[in-house]
Length: 240
Ligand SMILES: [Zn+2]
Image (tube, rainbow, N blue to C red; front, side):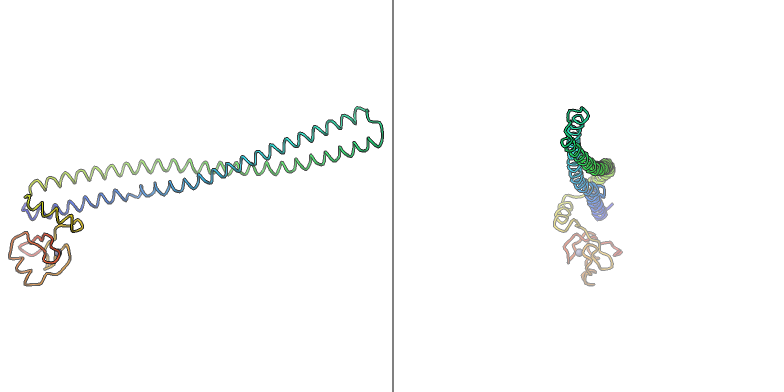
């Protein structure tokens, strides 16, 4: 393997590493976890609202219940008065009966309203159960996505480590001077330090090199410089 071959191999290895690192950064599982977490936050807000609704509905049912009990207690008291025979005055008895009727009507109204409130509470509880279920499903999905991310990410990280080792293997056989030039260009030229001269074109900057200049480069050393982008230009004897 010539120094020029190693330059090309090193470039390919560095590009592969950069690609793998980008893939790791942009794994769909990572994005999916972030999106899911956002969605779960929204569902949690709905859950909190549903909980508040249920609490309110239940307290209204309880209040209605208390009211119905209080009215029933009054009915019982009045009824006892009627049954006991203590009230003998017909006018008073008529008043008592009227009052009892009113109390019974009042109780009917309360009980009817309570039915409505209970229905509301039930609907609220069912809604809350659904939301809780969605949250539990979301949490399970999140755990799965995190596991997938770790598995895929772990594989990628292992690949990257392997590629970095291979890169060190290539670099170990290269001259310090070439490496210094390569590293400096890689840093300043968007990660690509090497182009190959092919059909009079630099493969890195895709610029046609004037024929006479290309001819002169072809006649020179295997490692040249692109007159346009100033990257290292690998020159093959056959121009390919
Ligand atoms: Zn170039």
